[in-house]
Length: 192
Image 1 (cartoon, rainbow, N blue to C red):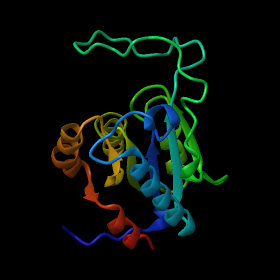
Image 2: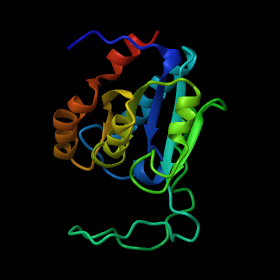
Image 3: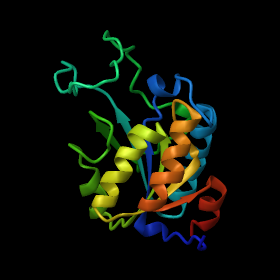
Image 4: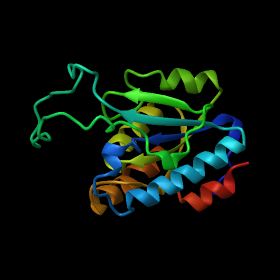
C-alpha cells in the first residue's frame, strides 16, 4: 500500500446521506455515531487545509413523482410519509457556510445533480468518500466518480451499511478497483 498524500486544494470530501432518517437506522460494522464523528473530523481538517467539503442528502421531490420504481426481486420499503426532518443533516457534522450541499433523488450523488460541475469548477480531481450506506449510496457515487475519472479515497471506518457483510464485500472487492481504501487516521495524516 503506497503512502497517501492529499493535495487539499484539488481534493473534496464527499459525505453521503448522514441525515436524520438514515443515521437512525441500524448500521454495521460501524455505528452511525462513529461514522458521523469521523466524517465531521475529516470535514473540519480538509476545510481548514483549503479543500472542498460536500454534504449529500437524499429525499424525494415534494410530490414524490421522481421516485424510482423499477420492478425488482427485493420488496421495496413500505410506503407512507417520512418525518419532516428525515432529510435534515445531523448537527454533529458541523456544516459550514462554505460547504456545498447536494440534494439527490436516488442512490448516486452524480446523476441528476450539479456535483460534477461544482467539483470541476473548483479544480477537484480527488474525492475522499464516506457515509451511509457503503453498498448503496457510497458505492453508486464511487462507480459514477470512477467513470468521470476522479481519483478516489474510501474512508472505510467512516462508512457503514445495513450489515457487516454488505460493507465488507464493497470495501474489499469493489473499492480497491476504483481507488484506495484507507482509515480516518490515515486520511487525516495525509491532508496537507
